[in-house]
Amino acid sequence: MRIDFTKMHGLGNDFVVLDGRTGALPPIDAAFAAALADRHTGIGCDQLIVLAPSDLGDFQMLIFNADGSQVEACGNATRAVGLLHGRPATIETLGGIVSTTPTDTGISVEMGKPRFGWQDIPLGYAMDTHAMPVAWEELVNPIAVNVGNPHAIFFVEDPYRIDMARLGPLVENDPIFPERVNVNVAAVTARDAITLRVWERGAGLTRACGTGACATAIGAMKRGLVDRKVTVTLPGGPLTIEWRGDDVIVMTGPATESFRGSFETADYGIPDKVPA
Ligand SMILES: N[C@H](CCC[C@H](N)C(=O)O)C(=O)O
Image (cartoon, rainbow, N blue to C red; front, top):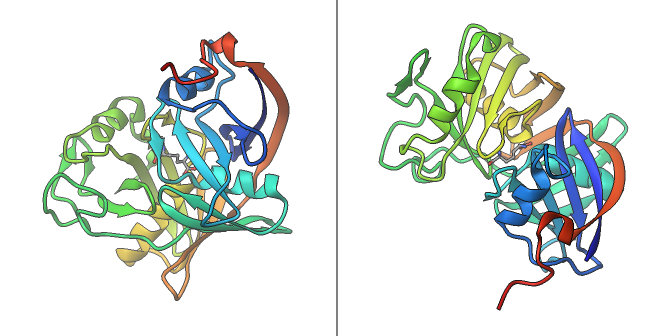
């Protein structure tokens, strides 16, 4: 089965986007997603994004990490599909309804309201999520925030001196996080500025993480370290995050269409239909 795709990115966090809003797609499972995401044998991306019809919004966005895990939210991809859609949209995701608005400075996204309870993150048992009494070597006492997906945020002296390749997976896969977790290491550099690196659940170190920027900004605001509108600078570039008076997180930043192509499902060992 030949399938068209659009390759996109948000600050270097890259996606393969399959648009199933009009044409039929084969069933998408973890194996399909991991095959496409593989940078050696597949097309290569941090996340596979699948658009589908929706009864709750203009369309539904399914999000699969490079390891095939299906997840609730992806900020950079939300901006990307907002660009693709070309006009304001409400989008159904596993993490709730988000909405996009193209502006002259990029795509603005209402990402919903943050949650802070230990069961909301989720954690495996009751614990103070404002400063979790846990440590992984020099990463200590994170704040945990759910912005549709789970994040642990560590405030450190210099994020670029943290060995993310070693410490990221340790935190990501710790049993205290029954659904795993995205690992954020951040430094507050001013009342309106944060530097951030993210080890993503199911994808590893990425050039940018939109939900990570949202969660980190909210965490810094909860700790009184920054004001309610900040610029979060990731390796791939800056995002603006605002925590609005109605508790909704608003993220604004760029989105880019890289190229369009098509592939044959058989080339990736993908069956055109689920085996009976
Ligand atoms: N790895 C994340 C999903 C992608 C988030 C990131 N790409 C973003 O832009 O928000 C998770 O498992 O929750």
